[in-house]
Amino acid sequence: MSFGKENSISSMMNELQVESELSLVKVVALDDVEETEIGGFKIEYKEAESKFDVPRWVAHILVDKNLVKLADVGIELDVINAIANEKMLGVHKLSELKPDIYKKINFLLKNLRSKLDNDREKSFEYEKISTSVYDLINIRISKIISLASLPFPPDDIQKLITPEEYLLYDTVKLNIQEWRKSMIGDE
Image (cartoon, rainbow, N blue to C red; front, side, top):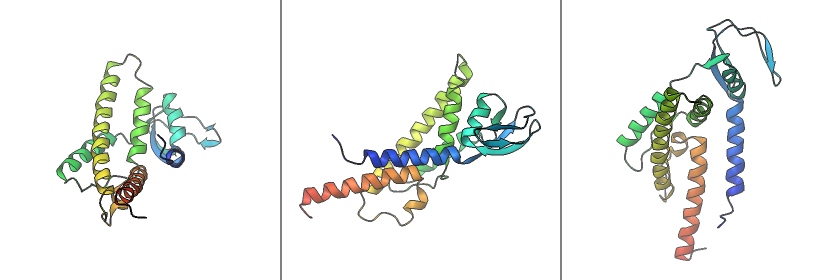
């Protein structure tokens, strides 16, 4: 069954993915990093332990080559805090998330996934984080669907949800409105 929204959702998610890959992340040099160029992006010489910003896609390459580590490793704490906040609020209440939380989560999980090779500690860390992420996503999906079904959503809805969540919210809201009209017979 096709709902006719797949292409727009897919293209919007692709746009968000491109935006994510181009966004800057802070990394820390594990050793001296010589001046280099990766895909047209120039990196000047960096001393060991120095922090610097690079596009996410460059960071992924540098992490894979064990030249840098991510400076922002507090995402696990952000996820745990977000879950606690969501559980404290009611069904129709959302806590505000950082707009780039899913981008950071995605990057962290990809990074961990690439290092799983028979490393029990990394596997455990990956499972723990991914379980927490799924918990957060499921709680948020439930609340977003509930809010999308309201005739008058909260005024601050766009402030409370990430761009990825807004795409879900908008799609669900339009589908619910269309379904309601078809049940009532309104044009």
